[in-house]
Image 1 (tube, rainbow, N blue to C red):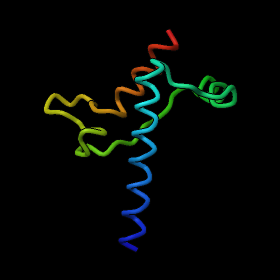
Image 2: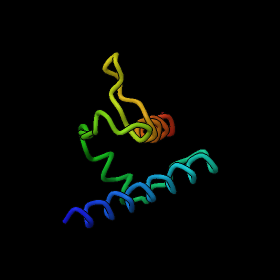
Image 3: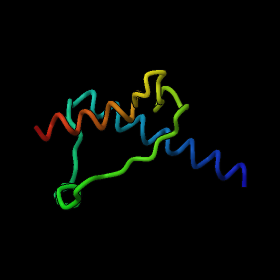
Image 4: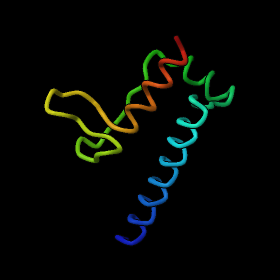
Length: 81
């Protein structure tokens, strides 16, 4: 069970890294029309974070959400403005 969890986490990290590299190269986050419609249909979207998984995500001493995942969310919001 522990090995399966580690493999899943490693795959997730690889996917996150690929998305971040793609976003940095293109300066955008590409979403399908279906994904965009889904997001627009929601009044709010809740995000669950690991408060101590830096550099991917972290809650800093000031209670702010920081890290790669936070940057991707901010990039998406910037594109929507």
